[in-house]
Image (cartoon, rainbow, N blue to C red; front, side):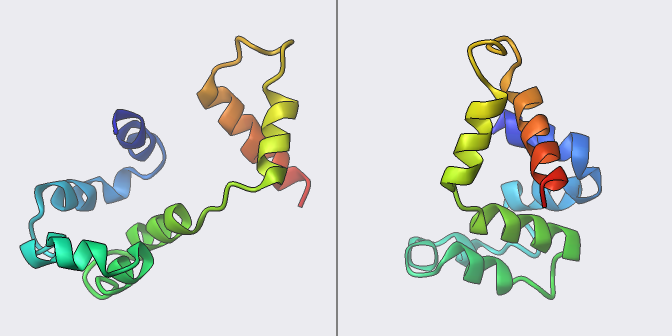
Length: 107
């Protein structure tokens, strides 16, 4: 969880207050949204879309990206290319940034 919060602090500081409201389960994140029934019978994308009018577009966009990301073989092979035996001290965060750059350059 700390890595996720650090990511938000570094790249999406403008939605930090919304994330803290989510964690505290305060407005617009009401108690009934966290009931077992709501969580077990609703997809995560539907859950966030239900809050569309109460959260910022940036928060919704980030959650849609998070919940629709696919671990594809292309990403994994790119990770293997970036994070190899030669670059084993690269670190996960730097490797992730390099993969993002690599993917954007190869679009």
